[in-house]
Length: 397
Ligand code: F3S
Image (cartoon, protein in one colour):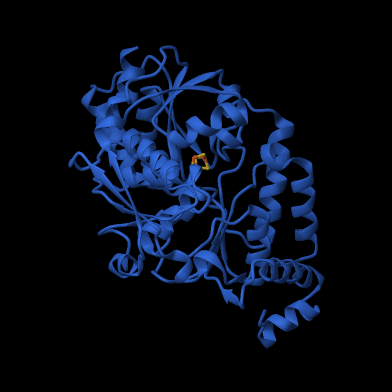
């Protein structure tokens, strides 16, 4: 694999042992993947920073790295961690303290501690720029919505990529690696405007396309719906890559490059028919996978206003970001809390014990990604609900 002089110097150890070791891994992986060269990335997004998932080995690895005084060479953000940095939700003190050690190690290496899985909502990401991102929903989002280029990378590999500011050029980092293989058309005509249906559609596309790359012909109403489509699709797809007709920048170019595609028709009405609430009992509603942005929180605020600021009978937990909290007046946050709606910051139920800490064993959720991970990762059961219906269930229970 070709290396320029700066990359050779990093590999030789001119910039310290930690950088040399990081380069050794990047180059080795690049050789295995038959990459022809390294490419410069603009941003990195680290996932796998929860103490629940990486435990003491991950904590010690990151602390050792931080002690070597090494710094990230590119703008680097971090996925949700195991704790809400503003509220302990009754979680174990030792867990919280070890999580803070991970956060502090990443901070000292220069990470921006957004602690969200939706960094794309706060960055101006330009088409055809290179990134090293690990969170699958975010990978799918910037590929499909911005035509920004990243593979779905493992979390530890992103840490090393951020240290040297490089990734090997292979797969989705090449135009040939991004050519769709399947044209997926949605029958039924209607614009998809429902988060649960979008999520189920994402799973269906991943199941139909398998190892291929879809060119999706469908119409969606709003960013919240596209987030659910891509989060679910990325959960089930090995690539977390699709082109969406009329939405992905350069979609015409991608379409023109497709050679003998497999054609798949999906009847959206089949999906809609299967979206009734499954099961009955639930302890709380969970929303915010991927993290809710301001628009999605506004929908909830308007709903509560429509309900005359009554209190929900079951608690509603919504995962969101520091940006959203900072943009809301405290009186709005208090009003939501009085309505039994709780904003949860910087974390996610599948990498945190917080739902169990507040006594929740079964949630109602619209997120197909949560449905996949909650039972496996934290032993929480789910029932599915459908957009506004999730709020209705909590208020009408
Ligand atoms: Fe984000 Fe967790 Fe969902 S990281 S995409 S809220 S599973």
